[in-house]
Image 1 (spheres, rainbow, N blue to C red):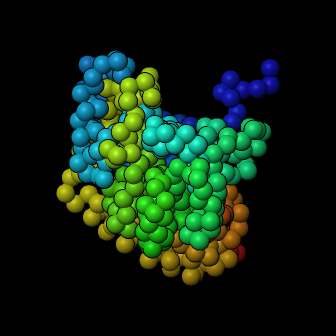
Image 2: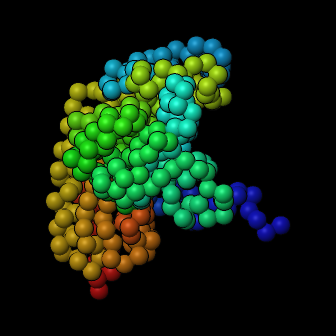
Length: 391
């Protein structure tokens, strides 16, 4: 047998982490790493956050799982909090961002088809997008590297350039049901949507009777300095997908919707065996306990305001390594001149974890609880690696 016991679908870095504390990870071989990847924007409160640990311990000793055949108190509590702090009226809980997006797409189709518009099923998506790894969500993302080998491509998605309203309008047709956008494209290379573009998407959706879906799986939950990234634009969606930071490391996804958008999602239309079980809800409620404390998002903005000038200075100092810094809050992309994988590997070698992204970007997605010490340490490593690469 030549295949590994763990299916080899990842090109894994040869390191095993055995514990973490705050923004730091400790490997089995004794090495320490500053985590500016946060498990790809997941461990928003860092590792082993005391409040999350305590909440999970309490819940683990009481009840893990019952299924959605019965009421789950933690779901009701979390849904109430998400509704209170968002545009939404209702929430479906699942286990991942891809599942949240599947729910969003199904909700949009159901909205039109339950009203007799049987041919309305197509969704307009944007180039550079990433919405998950299921058959439907790789079709929605439209990236050839994700579609290769999984033909036939799931029908129902029409892609247009990110940021171009004219081209988007041109593909709206009788079968169009919805538009989906990441307010900040993550995997595509940390590309924020322009505020006027966001407003334009809302106008187009309203004009043609479409539902507007926001994918905030990566950019939501405080990453940009507000609970949700779309709040910066003042534009609200009809449906929104969340995951990643919502569980602080525990697999939790959520699909939020207005009453109008979700009114036809009745018993039997959707489901999840594990989604929203008591253990997951304890984790997510603990995350919101921390994030909804007064001053939490102010802290994210304050540390971002310290970090960004330092990164701009690095770009100016080392133009042979980085040509641009972009993003919002603590969702940051450094546009690389050398191959981004090489830069990420060099940073890893110096003890800083980062993540590759589209458009040859190095992503910085640190825990939202970092402070000056972590910023100084990260910038020092970046400076050292840039100097080496420039030489």
